[in-house]
Image (tube, rainbow, N blue to C red; front, side, top):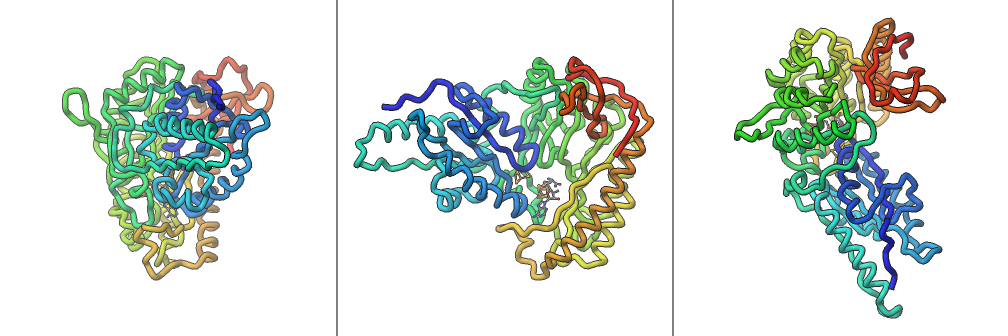
Length: 453
Ligand code: SAH
Ligand code: SF4
Ligand code: F3S
């Protein structure tokens, strides 16, 4: 009978948003007590997990091509050890469940984002199943165990995950809110991540303290709608995101705070005030608008208008004059005319973004927008995306150029590729390259910016 090695290797490949990055770290923390050490080399892994994203068609399809490539690693190894076990986690797992195993029977395990705390139990079952098979007579084919766990909304996840052993580096993510109740008509997130849920304040403060003890000085608070955060305090009250930011800022050793992603309809006074009063909150705000046309915003079920978005930006800039804004945009939503698209270009000009993400609309199964008749042809989407990106890139370059000659505090995050080079982040999320000694990694240093692009 084959005995599994005490030390086993784990490889997790992460797709999609920062919440998946956070989840990947938590999964590897959870598997450590079972003997799994992370490796950067997938060829030597005993367990490979793809932590997937379902947001656009391309993202979801990547998973299947990656699974095709992984097939070779399933074969028993030369040293007699069995090949890798393969799991699919994340939003594709939640959306497609068993379908994944039907399309790729070599997958051993499919589990959704709310079930990561159950991972050790699922992996143990798989390991035992393999051992049983090793012992079975050769002519008797043991039934292969396939595990699918996408049970929805058990929100015990955060209560039951083991304490984190990460981070890597001085900047860390911390998920404070999950899920989405907004149901924008193009978006899969409400179906893959479930209803909005806020973690209690005490639990978050404890997690932040542990991160700080390990050398973290910058924390980015994460949520699909992070500004919808309404967390319970120990006194049975609820706290908004601005108040949570102030609580965290009081923790000794924590120097910088950020948060992402926000929704225009969840802006609260405490958040505006945090931008005005809390120096540890960085002057950078990601607020997606998606489109500049009220007709398209209504069809997207965004429930805000072009004007209400512009008013938010105006008020924020009054509170924090040096605030940099970033955004998300979708071009080619069904029914988008040349005029609607011109309205998008126009809102971009009005706001002036320091950075942005822009995408062609991708029809997602199960979302209402796929049923709208008036789909925009692919070539029109491509032309519009190129035009929008040209404008956004010019704005980003102009923003970067405007910081040349300024002195900025930069958190040194890691050594650069070149000898003697360090890479850090400015308050505005710009990546900053400087010459300097390695001992500065983890420190916040004042830098005179000499060049920007
Ligand atoms: N909760 C965040 C966004 C999460 S998804 C928010 O409301 O802004 C990140 C971005 O992906 C979205 O802002 C949107 O621009 C883009 N996106 C989502 N669904 C998409 C789709 N079907 N096609 C193209 N882009 C999409
Ligand atoms: Fe998707 Fe809209 Fe929810 Fe953002 S707010 S996650 S775009 S449904
Ligand atoms: Fe993708 Fe899921 Fe994040 S669909 S963007 S990984 S919430």
